[in-house]
Each structure stands twice: as C-alpha cells, then as structure tokens.
Amino acid sequence: MANSTIKVLNIVLFLALISKGYSTCSLEDISLTQTKTGVTIQGKPEWSVTITNKCPCAQKNIVLDCQGFQTVERIDPSLLDVDAKSGACVVKPNQLIYKDPVTFKYAWDNSFPLTPTFSQRFC
Image (cartoon, rainbow, N blue to C red; front, side, top):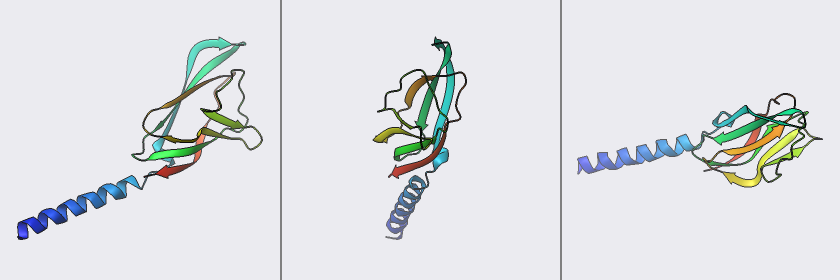
C-alpha cells in the first residue's frame, strides 16, 4: 500500500513540475535570426528572417519592435503585419505559432533589429 502511495505521489509531483515548466515561457523563447540570401532586389540585398517558438506552448500575436522598418520587397501580411506608425509588427496575426518556424524575406540596405516585445502564450 505504501509503495502504491509513493508511486502516485511521484506521478503527481512529476505532472506538477511539467505543467509549471510549460507556464514559464517568456520572450526569450522566441528565436529570431536574419541572414542574407545573396539575392539583390532593386539594388538592395535580400534578408531572410526566421522566427522560431521554442516554448512548449503555442504563442499568438508575437509583436516585434520594427521601428523604421522598410523594404522594397512585398511581405505577405498574413506572415508579418507592419504598422509603420506605431513601429510594431505582428507575426502571423491572430494565428497560433507552434514549433514550425515562420519565415519571410525583405530587401533593404541593412538588416533591421527586429526584437520581440510581446506575445500571448496558449498552454
């Protein structure tokens, strides 16, 4: 009987630790990398941006600080909604982002420091 009780308590403790770990996601769980593609568009180098959610939970409405962001290449607004007035960009607006990376490209003289500033987590 005591052996069964210990096993049950261990399982409960394990599940509690797992659920606690899932709820501690933060902006540091959003990885953003930029690389030159080697392509030139209207005389400007093209940049490929990959955003990865490393949180075990889905995230939604990831907002990037993109103050001053410019591009001569069209970006699909379902991938990145750019609001030039506020200097904020929303990654895949109103869509859950799981583990699959989100990728888009833009063309400008240099890369922009796109920094995550907000997200909604769904555990």
